[in-house]
Amino acid sequence: MIERFSASQAARHMACHASADLGSAIPNWQPPVEDPTKDNAANRGTGMHTMAEKIGEATTPKEMAGFGRAIEYVGELRQRRRFTFLREASVKAMWLDSQPDTTADVVLYTKDELHIVDYKFGKIPVEAVGNPQLLYYAACFAELSPKAQGAELHIVQPFADNITSWYVTAAEIQRFMDEAIVHERAIQAGDRSFGPSDECKFCPANPHTRGDKGRPLCPAMMDLLYPSAGVDEEEMLA
Image 1: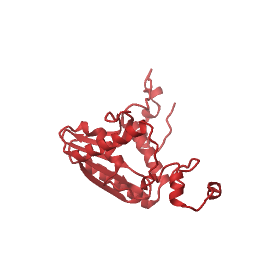
Image 2 (image 1 turned 180 degrees about the vertical axis):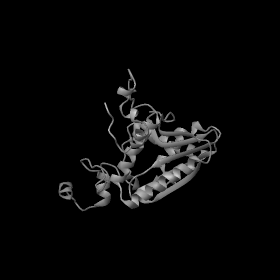
Image 3 (image 1 turned 45 degrees about the vertical axis):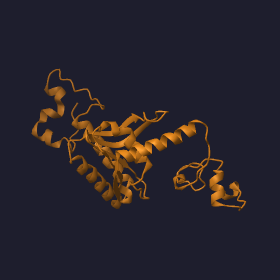
Image 4 (image 1 turned 90 degrees about the vertical axis):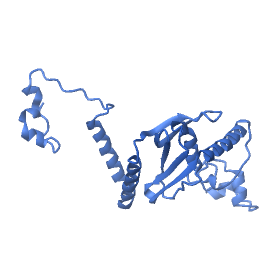
């Protein structure tokens, strides 16, 4: 079958007419079996094209510029040393009793240096300093860098033009782990006490959650937001 004289094949067809119909030009010729899972230039190129198309469809010019800066930042980070690079790295949080699975967007490490990058795509800036999610990742991946004195944690948020980092020491990571273990054990033991705070932003029981909302709403948040007002939940959500 003659290949379509396409933009991507034009140069080859013009240089070698036989390449447009190898089945006729070479007796018993068999085309290669395409494997979309194979790590080769063609499949990588297809994946990159798909990614570029999705970015172009889903973003404004300003957001695309932010995405470019984000890619440049991570690229420069990777160039600092001969890091082992992990993308969508998954491990079990063995330091917790329940040993849950966790996945970090990007992990870069040597025996004595650890970086963790967390991509965020919201438009409200997220701070790296004091970020419990980043500390959790640091606790999970610290064993990859046994000689490191700590870890550098990064928030890369292209659509908010926000790229921040925070160096946390091994002692700070350990303190977070100790505190998290206490809270997890309390939950596992049946403690269901409410603790309304800034961390409620995406809780599905929060009356003003930024995520999907469930029902009924959190009684502690209702009392905090509408004290002694006798607000009817049905009327508020109508």
